[in-house]
Length: 260
Image (cartoon, rainbow, N blue to C red; front, side, top):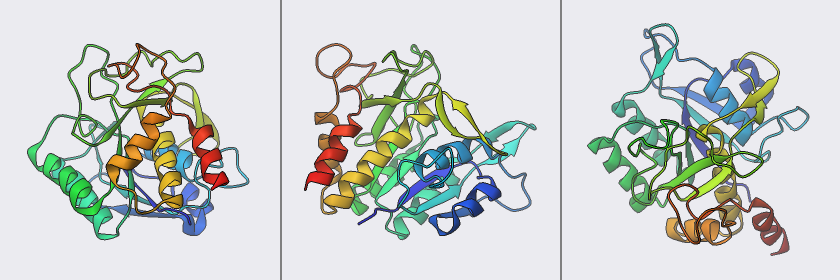
């Protein structure tokens, strides 16, 4: 069976959403009177998760449905921001729809209400939350929601398995995935390469959805263990603050799923 995936991000290009037909549902939370968020980031992340079968960005989960919630608004002409209140509303909506995997390619400061919402999603709804560790640099403080307990915190590596130069580091980092010069949809038309931890997170979200499609009764901890146990150790032995447990081994997970 396919597992539906949730996405909390900026807006998505309507043409891209239309191209995917019934595979993607886009909801905007912000007041319609406020400036709409940009479409570049959300479109790129959504295309990585669920793309068009016959396009240059077919997506990692072509058979799954994506519920994309635009929780951002544009300020100052070119900056997209989301309040903690809107992020909580987005998580509540996805919980109400019983979405099992949520991709959070966003990062910001700690917030008590967001933390409680994350804890409720994990403990109360057994939801896998996958979050980018952020791009504030190797000396920056941890960013959230990636640094919350039991959230899968994802960093980005390039084709040579070197960590993305701007990726946050810390003991909360769980796993690494491709996130440098990743090919995905552009906001208006066509496709281009993107770099950042935001674009590594969808690889882990897709892997988590694959695991759940085969074993839907697994807990959050069990899915995390499956992902990290199969990771290729590419840093210091064991878990480290740069790569976590290592590089996501999607090929092994796919072979296991197809062999069951």
